[in-house]
Length: 165
Image: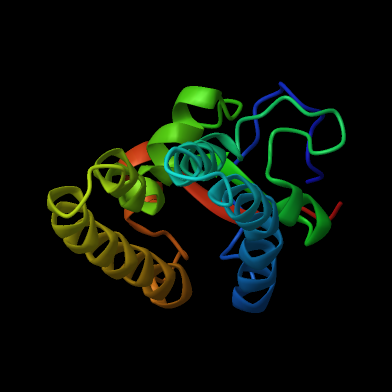
């Protein structure tokens, strides 16, 4: 069965997506977040906060954006011919994208405190560490779970499949 056009339900019966493709897709998706975070991070004091929050927002919404070229999936998934699908067969939505990617954006909470000298840094560093650990767990689950489902997928009722196009 081919992948229907954007907005139409997708049957989630396909198997686990290729692990290598998922890794490359994640690296591609990281590029906009890194660029925005770096450029805005050059702005003294508030730039890191804004850059970090925008990067986190990107991770949350990337699978639900209605970009014509991406067809309700991140640019990395589009390029690697992968698609996040809902297990209930309904189309991907912004809300589901946010739920699915919430564990990957944990670190962004640290940026809220980062602008407070000393005390904020002491609060932020453990949050960044927790975010890194959660992201690592998510990556391991995506690669080792029988269906390739990470915590975010289980919470949102989604999985990533091979899209064919």
